[in-house]
Image 1 (cartoon, rainbow, N blue to C red):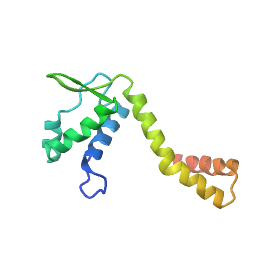
Image 2 (cartoon, rainbow, N blue to C red):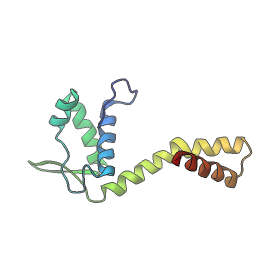
Image 3 (spheres, rainbow, N blue to C red):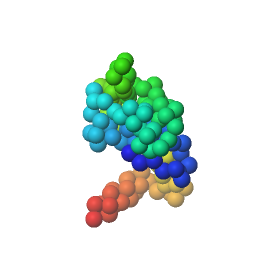
Length: 125
């Protein structure tokens, strides 16, 4: 997990996204424990309340759950939830603006898909 203090996104969101990244790559498996808010705050030299806010956000979304006296753990189905959440954000941030611009340019859905496929191939090389 990386925290960028120059980033315009709040630190607690960066904490939440970093944990989500860890879940997606398997660093924090389902039913596995994540670092404590104290560990996160010490590692990144941030206020413990900020770390707690990021972790609590994921708990509210059902991605993490608390075991009393033990800490926070990754919920069953967390990978699916994170992927759904990020897919929805991807559509809002990237796909919808792409579609609007494609329409302004007079591109058909097929032409737009072809451009996207070409871009995927270019990225592979």
